[in-house]
Image (tube, rainbow, N blue to C red; front, top):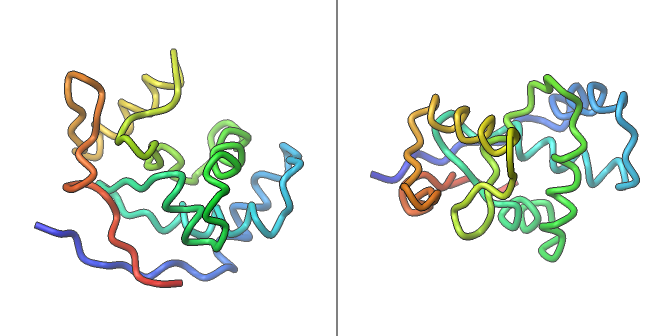
Length: 131
């Protein structure tokens, strides 16, 4: 069953997340960072998206690594559901404790992870509406 399409929150909602991240300065342009926050904040419970999907959605299709950089620099305890962002192979890109934290957060939302560490993108990928 395909999940329903959802609308993205307003950019005003993303500004609240940007204020939280101000404690951790980033070399990435603020507008880019806000657009990333805007999309990540909209990923529904129990669904995932990829770094590349976010990059394409915000109009920077070659910026998947930069999306990862923005998420990597989020302050500890951020309300942003960063853990719902995975790589294009359906895998968690993090290692060690960070891997376990992301894996446990996804499992808590009912997202199944195979013994090989993959998430079925056909089943769990977010089907977003246009910005």
